[in-house]
Amino acid sequence: MSERMRILIGYDGSECSDAALEDLRRAGLPRDAEAVVLSVADVFLPPPVKEGVDDVFPLYVPAAVKRAHAHAARVLGDARTKAERAAERVGASFPGWVVRAEAKADSPAWALVLKALEWKSDLLVVGAHGHTVLGGRLILGSVSQRVLYEARCSVRVARDGRRRETYGPVRIVIGMDGSPDAVATVEAVAAREWPAGSEARLVSVLDAFMSVKAEPEELSALTWVDADDEKDWEWVRRVFEPSVERLRAAGLTATIELKRGNPKSVLVEEAESWDADCVFVGAKGMRGVERMLMGSVSAAVASRAHCSVEVTREPKPE
Image (tube, rainbow, N blue to C red):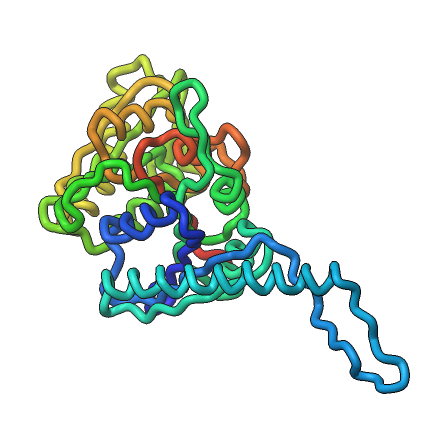
């Protein structure tokens, strides 16, 4: 990360984006950071035209083009007003932050992804905007989903699900499979500033067979674990104990839970039953790829969890 954390916040004035602003205060974010609140007007902004610039052959602009310009300017102005108001709220919540507002006319998802890339954001925050219910579970909105897939930085899909005391202790579930991304996720949580009494639950889900790296930095140190073998369970617990100690050293009350089942379901169920504030997961696991695919653990958890979900990515060189 840069010396001062850079946080890009997508805001559209919806209830979901308002919840994302409230959720920031329970995300363990530093007191000193830079933030940009970006509101995107989902319109095409035509190039500017000027009538009468040539006295001999004055340019004629059709009325429809004039109306398109006026509409785009009005929508973009509304977006800028929303961003400025949201930036004021963020600044009031985080007096030590440098906060500014921006507005763009573009496709919302791509505008956020490109801004995060150009600005070298450490974290991109979006609300779970546009989500619907299918089979009793929340399905993520198209903008949030596209941002999750395409952003190169960490992404927080914010939901204000618990509505507890804003500055009280926080409960965090961390998905752990021993992959480098999972280890980086533990480091990301440990680097945050959490309220006193906050708890972290490291959850490792063993399906039929699970691959675990005893030494994440050693590519060859890969061991297959049998989910039905109790000895393997104890071995996994010992492998992940340093991560638990790292969280405790950061001031969190930390434990490790070993579960059997499908990680996509178990992590969501664990967060719900424990009434967690947020789930942290790596963008890819031991079987993952560089870009998340539909059905991956991180995408499934971000779509279905009742609480906020942060998908962590380590900064990559350009």
